[in-house]
Length: 445
Picture 1 (cartoon, rainbow, N blue to C red):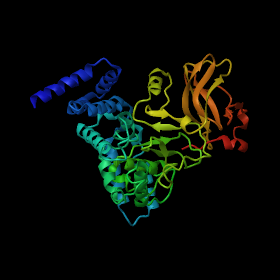
Picture 2: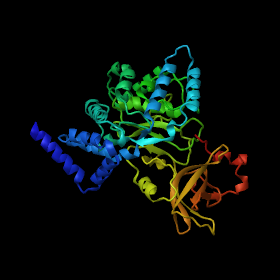
Picture 3: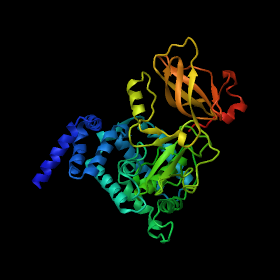
Picture 4: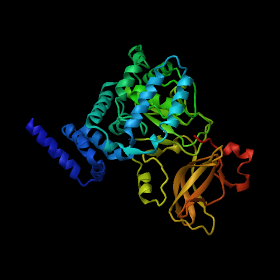
């Protein structure tokens, strides 16, 4: 036993002091954890004799600074307690429950989501170890997860959360208990039994039935991101339902991720959806939330400027942007641009207006939206030789580019339509509100 402990501690020291890039990232994550560093080191020591789990722990900890929770933990727990009381009142209709939560969100808890804290500064070793062990057990035990290689496992099954501000609680255990009755009742057959898609569809249908969603709303109060509340929600919007479905699937060992767009092309539809990695190695889309069949394909007539995947690993391009940009837009560090998997895209070069003096090499591209804001920033690009360069832009969208002049973001070109054939058509600014341009606009979320 003493020998094992000695070897474990030796391996931990070697891991932390290694000169490889991966372990430099690990050491940076440990340093930025501050007083919580010992909790993360307990996890590394715990897995010191299990190389595969140790590598998984490295992955989670290295990328943990990009993920965050509510800083005011006492207030959010108090809100969740209030929410549980309201959702437990059966005499209230779902709409009344929703309105009650919306009211207290705006009047008593409006400031909660204005401050956050990186997960590596608060996560506990017991929780992280439990989460890792649960994910590995699912991967090794269930036939619908065994097709994953290790790299796929890291993104599609391992992470302890799927969205930011999600509570660091035992959601896998809770949702597995609530949404797997039909899974245990599956009837074996020659083709579909124990396949990833059949299992995913079985769980998704149970989630849809049990939640008995009441309606879709653009506002429903603070997100219910606690394990005790996720399965109780009977109201919300497309992203809410897609999240619960994805978490339920992952709790049962289904490899799943969330994809989303920064603007909605069809109002509530196609703003966030989950994607299952089938045992054939194909990515099967849910189309939107719980009411559509997995694998029936994304909207064939959909269009939009961008699609991002909620990955766990840090997007290195965004990481460097955050370090180097003089004006930093609040892009999430773990979003991966996968627009070209959904739409025909173009890499574009836009000449900026003559005489402009910009204070930064980074520029921004915005999609036109159908409300008073008009423009919603969806991505950044770079300025080279008097031209703004943007990658993988969705076609059939009205855009405008912006740059930083040292004080604020300013327009650097006329609005333009990126047409279906990849051609660019510039539009006069005074016609931007014309109804004939609405077809090229998106919807703000």
